[in-house]
Amino acid sequence: MEEIYDLIVIGAGMAGVTAANKCGAAGWRVAIVDALPYGGTCALRGCDPKKILRRGAEIVDAAQLMQGKGIDPHGLTINWSDLMAHKRGFTDPVPDKMEKGLTGNGVETLHGAARFTGTNTLEVDGKPYEARRFLVAAGAMPRPVRFDGADLMIDSTEFLNLKALPKRILFVGGGFVSFEFAHIAARAGAAPVIVDRGPRPLRAFDPDLVEMMIERSARIGVELQRETEIVSVAENGGVFTVEVTSGGQARTIETDLVVHGAGRIAALADLNLEAAGVTYGDKGIAVAPHLQSTANSAIFAAGDSADTGGMPLTPVAVIEGKVAASNMLKDAQVAPDYAGIPTAVFTVPELARVGLLEAEAKEAGHDVDVRFTDTGGWYSNYRIGETSAAAKILVDKSDGKILGAHMFGPEYGELINFFGLAIKLGLTAKQLRSMTAVYPSVGSDLGSLL
Image (tube, rainbow, N blue to C red; front, top):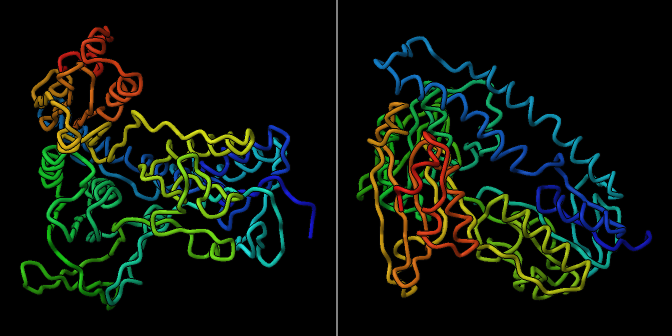
């Protein structure tokens, strides 16, 4: 057995890399391991490449909105292979940059599949390692689905590496992945269908704005089939036949590609956590508020690997990586601060949220002032030809503080950050309204929304 490490980090995504760099820079003997290229889902297989592809959709949509207003969009198309090459220009250098940064902080970088063999030991591709502390930050994987032919679906990683985009695409599940990819695909000339088993997709977002987004999606050719269950998928000669049931009736859908968009679970099944005595489930490892395992004090978890009840977001993973590292270094029990963290579905335009939903605020006993505004006719949207946009701001009548903000419209993924800051700092609507913004910018709309 080699010399004992102070910390071994499992997973070279944002949570793991953040913690490894912090502890390595503090002088600890640290190793990090991943079977995949360093960088994690967000940088390589998720948020960042997705939003690069979305840029193509933005350009096409922007031109179409200005048709008859001085712009002729005819002939404007997305060259999928060139757009993919542009994406790779960002993603390809990431693993090497990540690894060099870790090495510069004294972190030993390992490559292979990690598997626990005891409470303080693991092996990487059969080679044994021992450490005083472990941070599990192994990310997430597509949720297993149970129907015949499920193995014929591709996942989000494979979608982001498609060499060519087929004409007909069926997305299974009504979550982030399905709507974001469908909006990209529709602007690239495909005909996307989203099949969702429930009556309302994107349940974490304001239902009124979700319906507005669904209506906007339909206008660009994204079809949503609600309360529809996948029974089976079969393939013949490159064409997929998807059997579904809805309203008690069976029917089939023919498509050229089936994409898994039915959610994700913590990627922990292959780590043999049982050998370390760790309690875990689909939502991650059971941890105390300060991110230490409730069953094995040597193990901490962060990001998608930690069952904190928080949102599965990259900024949350970074926060948890920092907090877990600090707690280990200082032998402390500080809990992360999750207040005012926004999230967005990057459709075109985007759907954003921070703070409480209207129903949540009322259930928590707040006397809520619901300030809903249809902004489709406002100057900032008129300027670009968009007519579908709205905001719902929730203010506590007792003290004027902002409880939540929900927005659908162009650039609202940026505007939502102001509301996140207000919630984090406990600002009132009056205080936020006192800000003077650059005019005419989308930010200058903020005061009128309050």
